[in-house]
Image 1 (cartoon, rainbow, N blue to C red):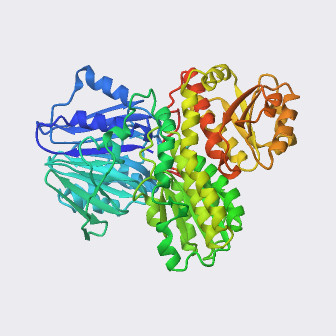
Image 2: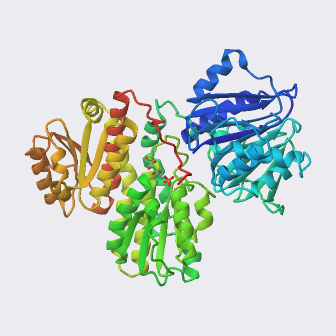
Image 3: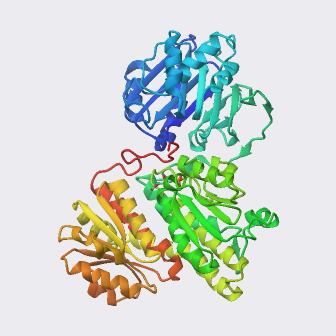
Length: 622
Ligand code: F6R
């Protein structure tokens, strides 16, 4: 939700290019409007803001309004919360004097009362945003008690604020100073040679530096060309070593693929291999990340597991529910985070909470997990983003190690999350003595085959006999598609439907196959096709019966089936075959053709696959 970037360096730098390039890398976070503020060498803070995508802003600037080079600037790409996505509500937001300017990601919850207070003392607001209140609050402290000390002014202003924020602030009076702060919103500092960067996420500045400092909750950073200092909201100085990012800018580029989503689908074998790295080897399973929890006895008394997640991550949790129930014989419940937090959940030290969030910053999940901790539940987080907010709320963190995912919809982080959950399930099963050594070895061997099996699906999809793209073109004209599955095939169906609706805007719904006849079958007719997940499983015959019921209603049926299953040909109009694996692992293979199908349907319909309408990569508002 919203991307922010900031730069401070030598006079004469082409700050505009640095900001616009960085914003391009952050556009996955929101694309309702974009803007930059640049302090030029003439000492003037130039502001450019446009509704719509960053391309609109770039076009405006290219039309003759290119700011002069300068030492300092901030930029923003917006996912609208308070106020429509128009030019006035676009960030950066100036104060009344035009000397101070702010960009913000998050929500100021008490903005209405603060706005009233500021208006009462004469401040003039020009937008409908909650962010503008920050500009006026900082103005108030800057010209008042803080006496033109920008860091102090920001600190004093933030003490009045409740909600979430990552902000960058500049003042025309301080050409060598960029101030950033965060609370429940991501913000990193990039260390350069005589220049420093602020950004919501690493790809925005990776071209310039791989030395990163990740700011912690409630910290304020003051960046100058040759120094960075960090304090907490109460003014305590913080020392923090930078970390070295071990992936380069190329990992965050399209590398010849037409879209990030397609590139990331094709990166899935590698992403899976990376998630197995150091965890599965020679028939053994290692999760060293859990050692501390085990030493502290936090896993000894687990009576129940609650998985908390949203969207695609919730689907991974649903798959985990099926397998962990079976492998560890612990009752598992998967619940969407937004429901969990208002359900007054029954939690204690005997309930293990597993939070799944690839971004590590989904507000619903964070709030839910905070509540779980307050009630004494141990927490394991599964995330792709190092040091993200969820990691600070957890007793242990299992990283996906999937590399950056830029496409707004989750693809490779889905398979990596499921894979990590499989390993966690096997670990718990072993720990409780429910899985024997030879069973574990058999399952680990199957797990290790999955990257090559996914590669096989991808290779076939790229070859001359591919049917996915051709069928996608035919299906691109329908207005509604139903998905069904049973057991682990049910969350697979939900994920297939979610991918399709997110990027192609075709109405799609997933159902447990046996549930269809209890109502939703009324939706089916010759115009409404159905996709059935009918890979090998103990409920295969049942799924086939449900597919027959559908065909009897004239609906066209496309089935995802296991290679070698010839019988299914009688029941399906079209088939996507996937390699054979253990039933528990089948979602990882069945999902791949569904992702490719959704991708090709979206392309055939001319949709923006990487940046679907109304969506943002990380949802940092509730
Ligand atoms: C779907 C998608 C979303 C996310 C959801 C949770 O393609 O990307 O449904 O899965 O917003 O995001 P994280 O995993 O970052 O908490």
